[in-house]
Length: 198
Image (cartoon, rainbow, N blue to C red; front, side, top):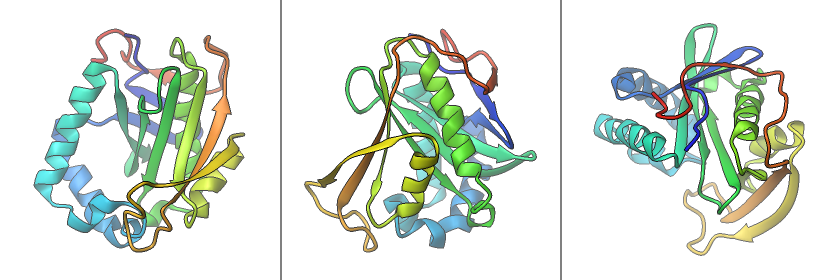
């Protein structure tokens, strides 16, 4: 199965594949961002180092399986957040997820990171759509999708309701319909992310 590159670049951000040896970086990022993430990310409420180690191990396993591609977001050589490209919305589809350290929000970095993932997704064979999902109480995520040309297609109540106290439990789904063949992009990508993904 073809995989995206291990390193993706777009404007002021560079995305690099999370590895198990990144635990110190991830642990610091989540701990420093905990209050910022609590309204939207259930894992933030119970984060501890062991959880981070399990996440990074899962990133390696799912990359090898071609299911999920997890990246650290960096800017100017500093790790500022995390993002992922996930095969969990059915055949031909990819979902994008992302979060930033609060000290790096408001700079357009989430849009740049998501844009790099869109460009990578376009290169994968058989992909005809890319989606961004977020709770309707989190319009900032919707703004990222809108800036990248996504179209809101529906709002769906989650079967189990909200996952955090700040959420409404209504999932807003944005979609970017793409041709299932590779297309040119301004994003430059390096690394050995095809084939084995090493």
